[in-house]
Image 1: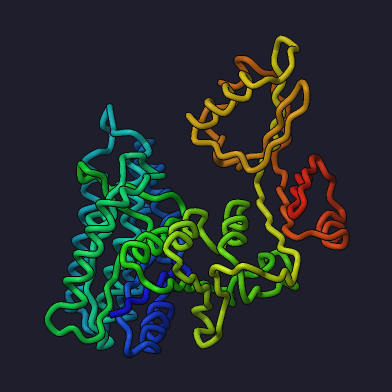
Image 2: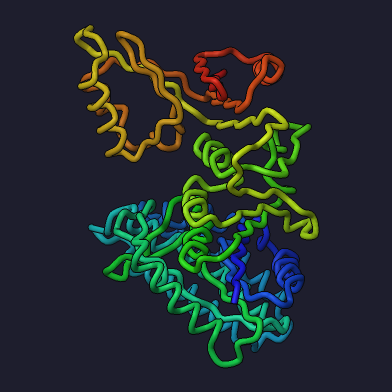
Length: 431
């Protein structure tokens, strides 16, 4: 039996209308068994991050306010979806919120809490648990056979909290075992399995997360484990665009991409596909489709292996809220391999990803996300051996398959602080 893997992001389930729409999309595939990967609803991840921030700073009032606001959001969706208030979904959701709230209250004002990253995964993971609980019960209400699975038990990772690495051997065996039993068991007609995206569990039973936007990655993990033919990521755009429509008015849909091109786009910051998603699919030759949950009958974008691929448009990627940092040795010496090794060691220890880099004889320049260095102390550590110059609030513009007109189009009215050009790609740090 072939199983389809569908991933639905937070925008698709950010309201009762959205949940109904997701169920209607499942209804378009009446003969297929489907694994659904669900993200937290709407801005729930951000809301849980606010709850966590208050918790870590022992701000009881702020935590309670943020927590109740988030709970009200979910129960407003429940009340609209489930007319019978004695439906079991209400008691299950109350139990989940009580579980989270109780653990937060218990840990409040304690002199010593577990590490912030550990707490992040423990708390923020509830967003996906809330969402899948609601979607699962609404599918059942809609007459769609559904079973809710716990990704913390299926996706085994190490204990690198907030960016956990997957144990592919354990995870593959576990996913195949659980899914085979479910889909081929008694009453083996069309079924739906509902799983949380983004989250997993380590060997000790602690909750871990796969990195922000990691639900795409979860879909790839499950598809690779099951050996499915394709994965569909349902988005609020028609497919993979040659630019973000939010800032590029005339963005065009790309009907076809190769795995290689998709990896390049993800690496440079394209938001449609998570950077870790593509490689497991390429290794197993699994086709990726990106389609619109707003217009589910449209074709979308197909990502697959192709020996040849024709570029139809330059592809633009914008990363905002960047910081451009130039480092020079304090002893006025040259930048040599030992310096680069030391710098990258410091960046790695502080989990700072470099988006683009450039070096000269006496300086080394990097462009990084501002939120990855805020509050980490990484700049103070670098200042111990280097003189720092930096520009904040800059943008990183990347153009794949550029031409002069494309460059002129997006640099008009902007000051170029750094330019780096290869045969197919140009990076521009602009103000």
